[in-house]
Length: 122
Image (cartoon, rainbow, N blue to C red; front, side, top):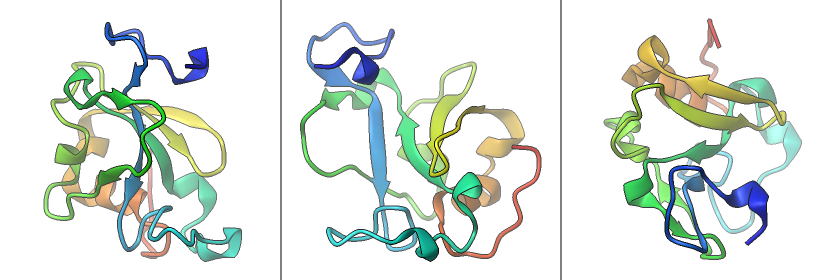
């Protein structure tokens, strides 16, 4: 497994806590994928990859991703770390989200690529 997929919180070799999130309005809605122009919210406002809790570690080559929990998006990550979660945005930037950004409305907005939500404080 390439080191880039490794997480410092994982002890089982060959597993990762970095996942794509699948869902109708996410960056990964279908096996067909989406085009850059489909990111109507902007690539800097759309989550591409998330870091999850160690309990959701999976084999790094396993196809597919996590299913977005529409009602409680923070549950998509599993048990929250005390410092938050790393996210890779579709523009290639990495952020840590925690506190207010973990509230359902903001987090759901970050998962959608075409919801026309305004994201502040990211």
